[in-house]
Amino acid sequence: MKINNHLLKINIAIGLILWLTVLNKSFAQRPQIEEVTIIGSYTPHISDANKILRNPMLKDTSIVLKPIEYQIISRPLHLSFPLYTIDAQKVQAESDVKYLKNYLRLGMGSLINPYADVYAHIPQSKRTSFGIHYRHHSAQADIKDYGESSFSDNLAEIYGKTVGKTLAWSGGINYQRNMLHWYGFNPLKYSLPENSDTSITKQIYTRLRGSIGLKKNTSNHDPFYYDSRLDALWMEDKYGTSELNLSYFGNFQYTNSILSAKSNDKIGIALEANFWNNQWDLYADDRTGLISFHPYFSTQIDEYELYAGLNTSIIVDSGDTKVYVFPELRGGLTIIKDILKAYVGIKGDITRNNLNQFSTTNPFISTYVPFNFRKNSLEFYGGLSSNLGRYIGLNASISTSNFTNQAFFINDTSVPLYNQFTAIYDSGSVLKVNAEISFHKQENIIFNLGINYSSYSLENQLKPWHIPEFMVYANGRFVFGKKFIFKPIIYFQSKTYAKIFENQNGTWIEPEPYEIDPFFDLSVGFEYRISPQFSAFADFNNITGGNYQRWYNYPVHGFNVMAGITYSF
Image (cartoon, rainbow, N blue to C red; front, side, top):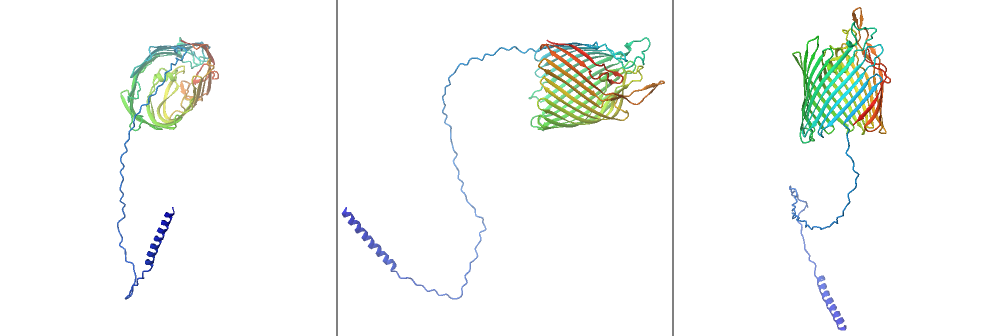
C-alpha cells in the first residue's frame, strides 16, 4: 500500500511539470503588426439584392403505410345448458263466442199502431252471408178536425254477400209498400164528393228494387282497384203514375308514386249513368238520361292532400243533348296529426228530380208532378274535421253555391180538396253552414249533436217554401249498469213559409206567405235487458211537440207511447 501511494505522487508531479512547459510557450509568442494605407475617399453602401420571384415550395414526401392485415381466430366456446322439465299451465277451457244471428222486435202503441221488425241472418261461412228482413208499422188513430190519417208501411228484403280472394260480390232485392192518406183538409170546410168515401184520399206507393255489386279486394301489392254497382228501381202509385230508374256506378283506380314516395297517388275515373222512364195516365211518357264522367287525380304528401278532376255531365232529354263541364278541386291540410284537419274545394254537378225522391221527401205530393234537372253551377266549400281525443269527434263545414231549377213544394190548386203538393222551380244562390259533434265510448255512451243553417236568395219566389232556416238535432244512447238503456231524441226546426192560395169567386188569389210555427220535438226511449237475449222497451214520442206542422195543413200526431219486447237468438 505504501509503494502505491509513492507512485501516485510521482505521476502527479511529472504531469504538472509538462503542463507548465506548454503554457509558458503559448504566452511567449510575439504580436503581428500590419500597416494599411488608404488612398482617396470611400463611401460605403449596400448593393441591391436580387429578389427571387418564385414562391417557396415545400417538397413533402408522403409516407405510405402498409395495409394492416388482421384476421379473427375462431375459437369455439363449448357451453352446456341443463334442461329442466316445465309443467304445462292449466288454463280453464272457454267456450267459443256465440254470435246471435236473428233479431225480433215487437211493439204496440197508443195510436193503435202495431210494430214488427224481424232480421234473420244465415252465415254460410266466413266468406259468405245471407239474410232476410221484414218490417211493419201502421196506425189507425185520426187527428181532430182533419181527414183520415191512417197509414201503413211495409218492407221486405233479401240480401247477400260473398267475399273471394280477389273479388267481393253483393246484391239484394227490396220490396216496399207505403199506404197513406191526404188528410190535410177540414171535412167541415171541404166536403168529399157525392157517392165517395175516404178511399179517394188514399195513396199507395209500391217500390221494387234490385241491386248487384262487384268490388275488388284491396291489396298492398296490387295497384289496380275497381268498384261497380248496378241498381234497378220500379215504382208505381195508386193512380197509374210509374217510374223506372236504371243506374250504374263504377270507379276504376290506379295507385302509383308519381309525386309521393309512399304510393299515395291515385289516378282514376268514376262513371255514373242514369235512365228514367216516367209514365202517367193523362200525359205522354217522359224518357230522360244523365251520364257523368269524373276523371281525377289525388295525392297525399306529408300533411297535404290534393284532389283534381273534371265532372262532365251529359243530359239526354226528349232527343235534346246537352253537355256540361264542371271543375272538381279539393285541398286538405293536416294541422295537427290525427287531431285537426282543414279542407277547401270547388265543384259543380247536375242532378234530376224524380218521383222516388219527391215521394220520399214529401209523401203528400200529387200524382202529377213535373220533374226537371237541377244544375249546381259552382259551389265553394270548406270545413274542419277533428278528433279531440279518443272519444270526441267534430265536423264543421260552410258552402255557397249558385243553382238552377231548385224544387220547392207548394199546394196544388188543381186538386179539389187543396190537400196535395206540386213542385215549383226557381234559381238563385244558397249559403249553408253545418256543424256536428259526437261522443262515442264503446257501446256505453253514444251522443250526437248537430246544427244546420241555410240562407236562400231566389230570383222569383219570395221564400224557399217549406225549407227551415235553422235545424238542431241531438240523439244519444246511454247504458247504465249493462241493464238499463236510455235513448233521447231531440229535434228543433225554425219557422218555415208556405205559398198558399185562396179561392175567391172561382179565382185563386195569393195572399201573403203563410208562416208555419217553429217546433221542438222531444222523444225518449227506455230499454231494460232482462237477459242478454231478451229485453223490454218503452218509447215516449213527441213529448213536447204537440200537433206541429212539417208541411202546410198537415199536423203530426201528438204525444204517443209504444211498448214492446226484443229478442235475439
